[in-house]
Length: 286
Image 1 (cartoon, one colour):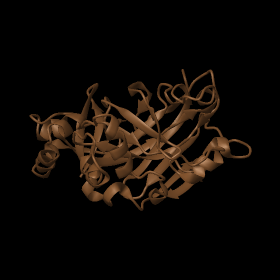
Image 2 (cartoon, rainbow, N blue to C red; image 1 turned 180 degrees about the vertical axis):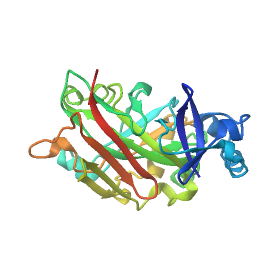
Image 3 (spheres, rainbow, N blue to C red; image 1 turned 135 degrees about the vertical axis):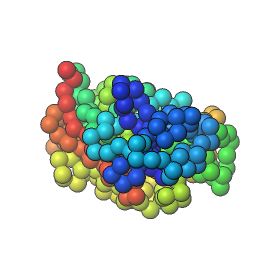
Image 4 (cartoon, rainbow, N blue to C red; image 1 turned 45 degrees about the horizontal axis):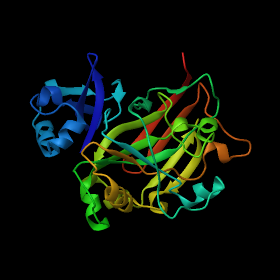
C-alpha cells in the first residue's frame, strides 16, 4: 500500500494512492486518524487499506496536481545516519565508521515532493544527498537485529540537502543539516510488505538537471536498517512515526572537482527502485 499526505482546503490530509488516483481517507473513512503518524499509532494501516478498497468514486482525486506534503510532518524523532556508505566516507576524507554517526533533523527543515528546496542568502554551498527513509510503525526498545525490522512500517525517500560550509564549521553537523526548507521527504510512504525486507538490494540514484550524480545500491550500506534500529533502540525507545534517514552514497557535490552546488532553477531527483522518484526544484529564499 502507498499513502500520500497532501494539502486540502488549507489542511493536511492523507490518502491511499491507486496508480494515478488517490483515495482521500477523509472522505472514504472520516473516523480513521487523518495523519499517517496517527494511523501508525492506532495500528490502523489495514483499516485504511480496507477503507480505500471499498471507497466510492466521490473519494477519488487525481494524483497529478496535488500539493504533496512530507508523509509525516511531525515525527517524534527524526534520526539520520552519516557516512553510511563506505565510498562516501572516503570521498570526504573520513574513515569508515565503526558505529553509526547519528544526528537529528528538525520538523521545519522538511518539505514535500515538488516543493522548492530553499537556498538561504547566507550560503551558496547547497549540496544534495539522496537517501532511503525508514518509518517506524511500532514501539521498540532494545531490539535485536532479528526483531528490529518488525518495527518498520514502511519506507520513503529523503534528500538530506546540506549547507556544507555551515556543516563544517564545527565537528557537530546539526546547523548545516537543519536550515528551513532543505529536507525533501516523499513523495509517498510505501508499506514494508511491498519491498524487500530491510530494503536491501534496491538501486538508488540521484540526478541533478538530468545528470546522474549518485548511483548505488542499498546493499552497500555500512549499517543496514536492521542494525541501525537495533543500535538506536539500545539507547532510546523508538515510537510510531519516528523517521530514520539511512545515509547517502558517494557522488555528492562537495567532493567533485570543481564542487557542484545546487542553485536556483536546478531540479534534483532521487529515485529508489520500488519506491518512486522524489523531485524538487531549487529556489532562493524570498
